[in-house]
Structure formats: C-alpha cells, structure tokens
Image (tube, rainbow, N blue to C red; front, side, top):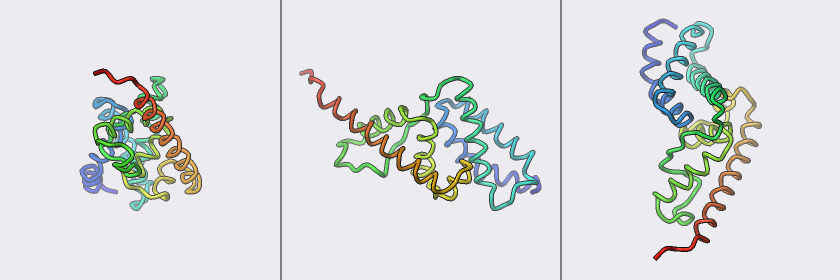
Length: 172
C-alpha cells in the first residue's frame, strides 16, 4: 500500500474507527490517542496486510489498543454507551426513547467490555459474524455464542432495571 492509499483509508475509515473508540473509551482525548496509535500501527504493518483486510485490521487493532487502555486503567465497566437506538428492543418494551436510551446505556455499562463490544459491532457498526470474528481473532461460532449470551445478559439487566423503576414509589 502506498501513502496515497493510506490517506484515502484514513479519510474513509478514520471517523468510523474514532466513533467506535469513543463508544468504548468514553473520552474524546483517549479515543483520539488510540485512533492515532491504531493508524500508526497500521502504517507500520500495511505492507503485510491484504487490501481486503484493511477494515478488519483497523477495527481489530483499535479494539485491542482500547482494551489495553481499559485494563491499564482498571476501568472495565466504564464504557461509553450513548446509543440512540437498539434494534432489538421495541417501543412497546420501553415507552419513550429517552428512557430507552438511558436503560440501554446503563445496561451496556454493566456488561463486560468484550460483551459490549460485540453488541457495538453488530448493531452499530453493522458487521456480520465473519467480520466480527476477524476483528476479535476468533471463530464465527464463538462470536455467535458470545453474542447470544451478551444479548441475553443485556435483556436481563434491562428487565431488572425496568422492574426496579416500576417498584419505586412515585413522588407526587
């Protein structure tokens, strides 16, 4: 890959990778730093990466660098989860979208980083199992089983939160 192609890739994928990192890290400066580290690492290895794998390589590198930062700070449960929509939940389940956003945000922050990242990749990055498996360096069947567990756990947390809200005495 030449520098021209690298710049095009940086322009085309930079914002997506940044938004992905921002959701994981909860901090603009951290996301910017890790984005820069990701592209530096990619630039160093770009001659070894197949052109068809550039996107996967970028997301996988960003994923690992973000997790390393999270582990370094011992902040596993402090993921950014400012999601506006969750395709899995219907409006019937949660009446207003603001409440829905807050419930999903709180629930995702209670998941392990690996679980939240799976949900992020599928619902917000619109990746298929093959792409997710490449990024996470695992098999498609492992992605499937981990994603099923993560979704079940997320639904359980949201349902528990809803019950707690329903059981709170209302202040008139």
